[in-house]
Image (cartoon, rainbow, N blue to C red; front, side, top):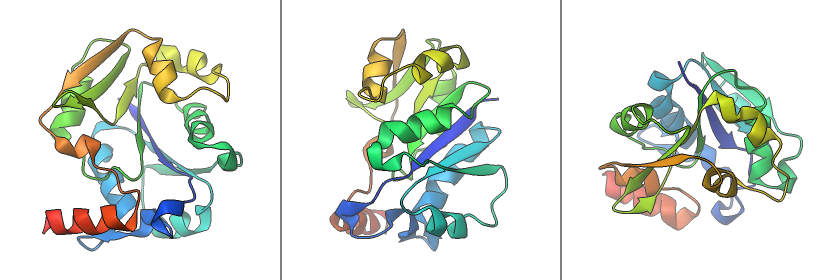
Length: 186
């Protein structure tokens, strides 16, 4: 079974606070991301940084989750990617923690794909989560700090998986995103 990496190490500077704790339907944002991924993975590595203590408190009761502090988080998201990838021992999904409402059907469609790297598209737009076969782990870990997931992905045999899930594009970066998403979900 695949494993999961959820990236939650950033400053949330555009949200003026820890967006992973923003509440939707009585649960913190990061819990929605975890619950969407959980049925398709054996373990989830939540990669923290700036809000490590807050996220640990939010997730203190959760099972099948390993919280990993990325000491290099000030150097950008790719350091959290590498931190998480260093932990996986199987094929894996990677998703930012602020993309909370990915449908089960999207995970299922990605798992049915064939290429070593897979990602969903909605109406031609690329989204999350990214799926990577374990055989590419070491190549990804060798990427330099100036790289990013898109650069790595685009060097691989990759497959775009069309899905009927606009949630693959919905991320919560600002207070306005949060308010708009709350309104859309009600």
